[in-house]
Image 1 (tube, helix red, strand yellow):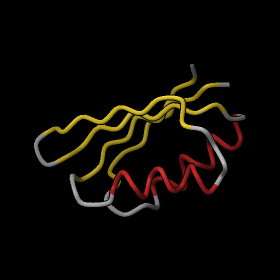
Image 2: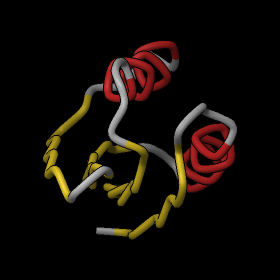
Image 3: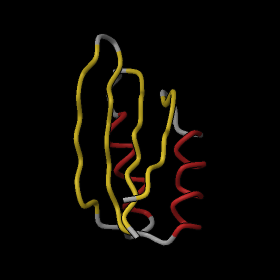
Amino acid sequence: MKWTYQITAASRPRVLMRLVQLFDQQSLVIRSLELALLDNRVRINLTVEVERELALRLQAKLYHQMDIENVDLLAR
């Protein structure tokens, strides 16, 4: 199933790199990636195709990343 993570994070160096690395560690292919700068924050939409359990575990791991403020998970 396809899942989209809507991530809000502080606009700091290496935020995007750390997020992409998390998905790379799970050997996942990122289907789409959008990045928008909003004042001193960034909004990142990232879509992957994974099972529900892994999608939820990744959401929890994202919250542990430095500079991440919010992570919404949407099924596609």
